[in-house]
Image (cartoon, rainbow over all chains, first blue to last red; front, side, top):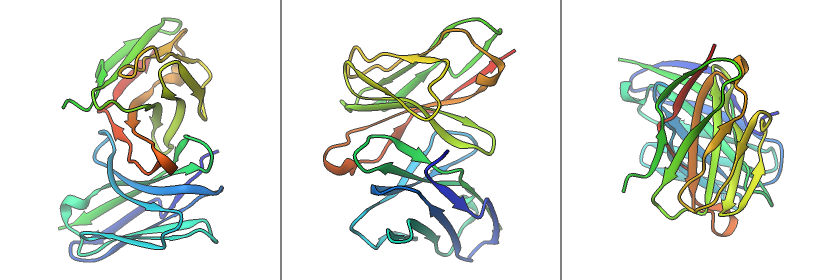
Length: 111
Length: 115
């Protein structure tokens, strides 16, 4: 079974609104990463948060990590139509090099 | 730098045929991996390698073989293709370092159809 599970599976919002997606995982990790994928193309790395960090920002992205709940959230502020994509979280179980991905959230931003 | 290069981009196979999906990276990354992506399933790890001569199984290794004779290349072999292997295959690499604090770099994928 997959390490990460994203919620919601799909999200549709208006341009300018904020988008929040969540990720839950099962084991202790070294770090958690978020990726973006456009239309079945290769994934692009967005942000990495280490297991000893609680929050991280990059431009319009804000990521939080709660290791006690084994969960993370990705917030995209002031969304744009160009943010329409699928977003995946990925974790590596501590002590391994297995980067396991969740099932993804499909975000649609309406202009 | 070309990054991660996958060939071919598209492939159609008949059941029982064999083929090799190629993956090459020019970033001197020790870590390389193969994923398959099916609709609604996200990415599932097939095999990975932490360096030349070292490979290990991921979540869904059955039906696939890999080898890592050089740092740059990590081919994925389908020995006897089955319709269940119809998928999009992605290769990824990174320089894991201490505590794996390095992002994965992805190729653009190979779309495989098995009839």
